[in-house]
Amino acid sequence: MSPKHFTSLNLCAFIQRNPGDEFPATHTAYQNAAAAFGPDDLFAIMSWLNAYLEDYTCLVDGLISLYEASGELTWIESAISLADKMIEQFWDEVNGGFFFTGKSHEELIVRSKDFLDNATPSGNSVAVLVLLKLAEFTGNEDYQRRAMTMLRLLANQMRRYPSAFGYALCGLDFYLSTPKEIALVGNPDDDRAAIARTFDYARRLGLDFPIVQCLTPYPRTEMRAELLAEGLVTNPDDLSRYNGYMANVRTRHLSSEAIARAMLWEGLKLYFDPRAARRSRFFHDFPAFRGAMLRNSLALFSGIGNRLFQSTHTL
Image 1 (spheres, rainbow, N blue to C red):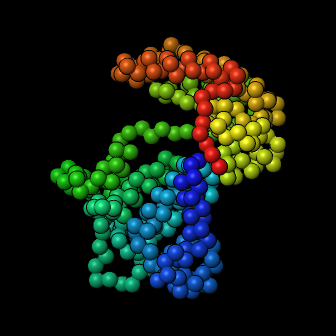
Image 2: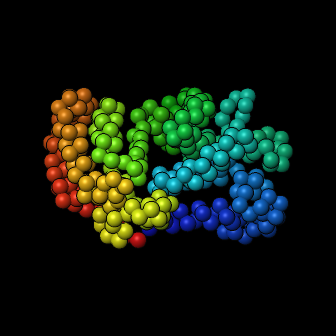
């Protein structure tokens, strides 16, 4: 992760511990809420502070991004909890879509909804994308159903005035595309056969261009701390090797060099399989891509010395 990711991670952790501290106007209200609910109950405090839809959606989006960058479950768990709270507070059970204010706000004559994307996207547009992402991560079809309800509500307007719904169109594009999913597969007890099974699984998925990377103990992650505690990190200091392709860990049965050799051999079988090339949409539809695919596959030979590519990670 880059320093920017670390800054975002630390800031979000601070918000979870101390929501309201960065905004003096709400600090007194936060102190009252923290006294009532406890300083760690972010969701109860946000309700107390009468957070609006955009506050919820943007924070959920940030939590998802932190999970994608760090792989730490605490962020996706927080995103799910906050999204569920958002649905409870803001969802229109009659017509669909999210109101701008929640049920805990003061009673208004009319609860409005905002759909237009201006200099900043609307709460409903951000909600479409974060719910679709959560549906992919969790398999919860209810998230996707609500996102589709909003897209249907906006369908005519997006056709007529696409420039006013830029972020909503990003959500539609995400839904119509095939999101790329990355699964981290690894276990301290993995042996040579387990690595072969991982590559065989990647082959059977039938993806256009599957990518299998080695578990990497990136700095300041829970995973790194756990691997260090078990003595499974073989390279804790040279971050130029932290790129997902070089082996910087071992298992209880394999050294990092043995992992590198196994990944090289299985990778060659995966990427030089003519059947996979024939199935690949890129291979057929983009002739210029064929050369790049071959060059990338040939680069695997540099993995013989466990020096596959180079990274520029820094602490």
